[in-house]
Image 1 (cartoon, rainbow, N blue to C red):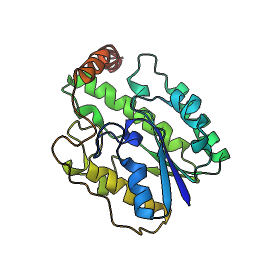
Image 2: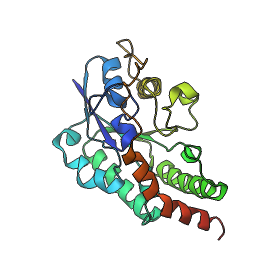
Image 3: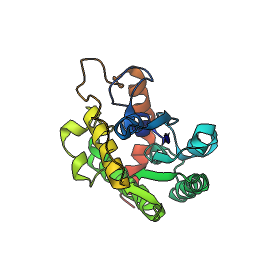
Image 4: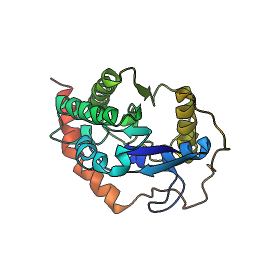
Amino acid sequence: MMRIVALGDSIARGVGDLGSGGDVPAWSGRLAHRLGSAQHSIRARAGARIDDVIHHQLNDPVSQTADIALLSAGGNDLLQRDFRLENFAEGLSAVLTRIRASTATTVMLTLPDYSEAWPLPRRVKAGLRRRIADVNGVLQASAADDVLLIDQAGERLLQGSEMHHPDRVHLSPAGYQALADLTATRLGLPLLHPPLPVDAPPGMCAWQPSFADLRRGLRRLPVLTEMAAATDR
């Protein structure tokens, strides 16, 4: 039986998909269901940075025996005050090296442009876009022939408001299903089962706005201010 593991941040974790608490199908679960004879495990967590993937997620025995590794990383790293592009590049290289050593096939996502997700001043948005572009450059440069890179911003099947969660950062249930189907198609794997449901009953998405989200947003203000200042240099 094929084994699929999801690594990285909240996109790989399935934030925005149907379910409650930690019980969501997410990218990996929807892919496993479509393939029929596959099992999946989510080791990704919301807020994870590349170091978390290296030191925690990849150390899990499940991660070391997977046939397919789904990776979403970089979005949380670039929002840190101590962010250094070269450090992220080194961390990503270490992650991909370890996945290759396990012989798993890697599927990796680029970052979407979520600078419009928050009501930010123009200069802050410009700085954020530049940092997103820098991280995407590293992701693209790191994707060798043995890595399937899916461009979230460029893939036609992932466009449209119905593909995104209301927070405009994460995918919706329909978006996760489209991503799973696209992954299978790009890997040349047959879709044996019908897709999982994507219609969300009220209150059944895995993300709801909270005071914790507000606090996280406020904590990002210093780094967003630095991004704005960087556009003037």
